[in-house]
Image (cartoon, rainbow, N blue to C red):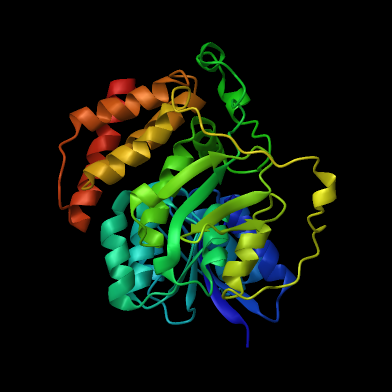
Length: 384
């Protein structure tokens, strides 16, 4: 019997690659629920090919098109964020791939955890926005969580069979993005088109901009703190332009384990779907002889100040990271539209941190309220 899977965000980069793997292993996997934000045409195409039991579109204005295309095929449809969250409680699948980008992944993930699902976690913002709360839920429900992010998958693989007490440091690698070699003066005037030209990875627009600012690396540090229950002072980032070493774990005896592979998200997705077992790949293997050298360097926090926000978020706690994430979502959207400059992304985030009230011990309702208040405040300030 195939392993039944729900994909939250099936039309995005991770979602489409997940469906690639499901197609490669039809005897092992079956997509039972597909959800998307607004790309109804691709969702319809995916549903026609994979024949899930349910397809859900968050944008309710797109539901009539979804319904008319799929219900004649016997595929149930629904619309709205609440419908996506409700779908996580269905009993016809046991694994959820959280492939959506941003805050939208939080509530579906929480509902899936409470429903006893296994989580293949690609939505880093779930643990960025509400890491303390969500990590407690993981423990309370005995949730099996397999990370899909290449960096966290690498750490997960390096930790298999190891005593957590012997971990000295988690070392998260970063490509450095498209502006690694540019001066601060040059970075001040870059365009969205330039920022979207990532030198190594093919990703969605939002995460590509986060890579360019290095805020994605700050988010990955926050995520790693909660995912692996490691103190923030034991997590660091290093720039590795070749993107072959996906992350490393240093142990108390000085040994360092690293996971290497070509920069292709199919590998960590396969590992997560395979329940931490290794499925064969048709991709060309990594040949180290093809690389003259693998280099590492310290990140430049003066040129990329967004990286410093990880320390602030983890030191201050509470709803700080939630504010950072929400302000960044608005700032990135504004930058992509040409409304603000690249450096103004960081300035927008720090302004929101001073404007939105701090909550030391937030509940889920507090996180939700913080997110919406920050979105409204930042959008108003920018004029979106």
